[in-house]
Each structure stands twice: as C-alpha cells, then as structure tokens.
Amino acid sequence: MTTEQPRIRSYVLRQGRVSNAQRRAHDTLLPRLGIEFSESPLNLDAVFGRNAPRILEIGCGMGETTVAIAAAHPECDYIGIEVHTPGVGSLLKQIDELGLANVRVIQHDAVAVMETMIAPGSLDGLHIFFPDPWPKKRQQKRRLIQAPFIALATSRLKPGGYLHAATDWQEYAEQILAVFGAEPALVNTATGFADKPAYRPQTKFETRGLKLGHDVWDIVFRRKP
Image (tube, rainbow, N blue to C red):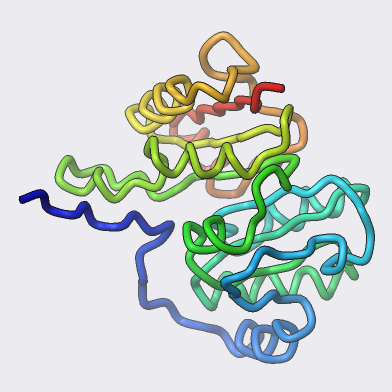
C-alpha cells in the first residue's frame, strides 16, 4: 500500500504582529484591491478592466518589491499572493498610497490559487523571490520549488512567458536550477544562473545580506513556444 505524499503549500503559518496601520489597510482596502479565493478561473480582463501582460508574484512579503515593479511598469498588471496579514496590509497600504491601478492581492495559499484560479496559458510572467529555503535536511520536502509545482506553474504561462526565482541560499539555488532545467517545457535564458534582471529591485534584506558577503542567485527560464 502506498502512502500519499503530504501536499506542498506555498507558506508556513507564523504568528506576527499586525500594526494598527496594517490592520486598517487590510480591513478597508482588501475588499477593493483584493480578490477572494474561488474554485473557478479568474477573468483577468474583467479584474483589471483591460487586456495587458499579466505577472503573478508568489510570496510578496511586505510588498516593497511588488509595488516597486508595478509602479515602474504601469503597462503590466500584477497579482500578488501572500498569506500573512501584516504583509497583505503593508502591500495594500502602499498600493493605495501610490494610487496603483495595476495590482491586485490574493490572501490564500498560492498552490491552491494556481490550481483553481489561474487559467492555463494566462500569465506572461511568474515571480518567486526569496521563497522559504527550509534549510534543515528534514525540512526540505516542504520547499515550494519542486517538480510537480513547477510543472503546474509552467502550464499557467503563455508560450514565451517567463519564470523567475531568486534566493540567497546557494544549495536551494542549485536545486531550483536543476528543477527548472528538468521541466521539458522550459528553457533557460542564461547559461546557468542569470544576471539580476533590471526590473527586480534590490530589497533591504538583500542589500543587508550582500554587505555581509552573502550572494544572491537569479534563475530565469521561459516556456517554450
């Protein structure tokens, strides 16, 4: 008898303090800027009120990167997925303060969202920046970037759409490169690791790590035509 493998989730629940500003933004802005989880595929043209390139980000953190990219590229629409309320509140607050019309937020597990809400061949890009590395050997089965999820993610990209991951854990970077490389529908945009694309801003976390001598690896593949 076989044992069913535990389902990979895009996150782990952590207790975190929600500031008054984050709670207020979460409660007042999520109804307007958020998308509720649904078992049906999204009509993205209806969500954004236009037809434009669509990029999804898994794990927005506190939202600085998401907002910076969206503000610099108003010609594209962005969907940010984050489960933790402090991060969702922070992201919503920044979207509102900057008056961005091209960002929507989903507060739910990204794997479930990808399975049910994102139609095949509907995304121009997918960002996975600094996913939880689960560094201990016994924890690594919890990592998001594994072959089944990457097959799912690739199926949601348009032909020519890109998949971009970044991490500051070398061992995880090597695993990501191997997993991406083993997906038959993807092709590497570089020879090995990629240079940091100009659209990805350097985060405060990343800057601090670089000052301490830590490296960051970008992995960028595209779905084959």
